[in-house]
Amino acid sequence: MALAGCSALPGIAPEERAPTASPTATPATSPAPGTPEGITAFLAGYVKRNNAANKAMSARLLAGYEGGSSLAIDKAAYVSQRKLGDRSHQPFGYARPTVWPVKGADWFVTTAYWKGESETAKEPTYLLFARDGESWRQMYAPDVFSDTPAGELPEIAKDASGAAAEVAQADAAGLLISPAAFARSYAAHLVGKGGKASRSRFAADRLTTGAAATRVKMDPYAELRESARPAAAYPSYALRTADGGALAFTTVERTRRYDVRQGPQRTYVQQKNSGFLPGKYYTFMKFTELIQVVAHIPPRTAGPGQVKVIGSYSGITSGSGR
Image 1 (cartoon, rainbow, N blue to C red):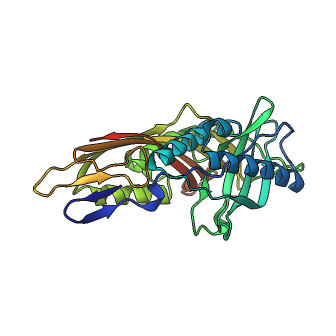
Image 2: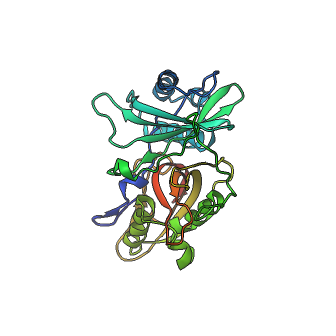
């Protein structure tokens, strides 16, 4: 978001801009890969199909290996790119993949490092795949926030076979908060709502601190009305971590409307890098985005604990204004 009158005014934080189509996932007709060789082959197939879809900006190809909110976000990104006339395509790969099959479940989690033509990401991406019939589709692709020390990433608990354990969404046993309650509370926290006790559940993270800073920065220029809720149309997942907590994946839907404060200086609002909002809006601007988050829910202990969101992936899916 940028505001301008007679001169440039504050802009939105980079992490809140709509992305281009992301590296996500590909299906396979075999069981979930449980060996280093298996996940390497699996991701190689994904990379080939994902690069082909991104180059063609083809929603049909995309739907062959993505589902859930990943598909919704990346389909919208293709629409945005077309509206902007952006045909750029950067082929990519993955390095150092690790896989955690989930015992008795039809989904599994991998971590891998995005690799471009000349650089490799310093932080991993979580890729969550779920079975859809005979295929595997990628449902989540949150990137760990930059400069996050590797030692701060929660260790996933494994049994003797190397499998992780699923945590049900309503299951709060031994946890500070259930995965479902986390999704509801975090959605409110993201837009500055919820009581003091609710807010104290969460450690500072890039999304919420960035959103709070943007609210303060934009207030002199536009009135903001925003809401957020768990995006119930898309599945959420959680698995057990080695400390007795949980690693939770969920999607939040956030809507923001900026009504420009009218005055002697002509002021407008503008969302950068989005084909859904390609112009300058002097009266109002409204848009909706989907935000994937991955969070560590700590175990319930005698002392205080906080949920920590450690990564995200998001995109604008609709917008309007005048």
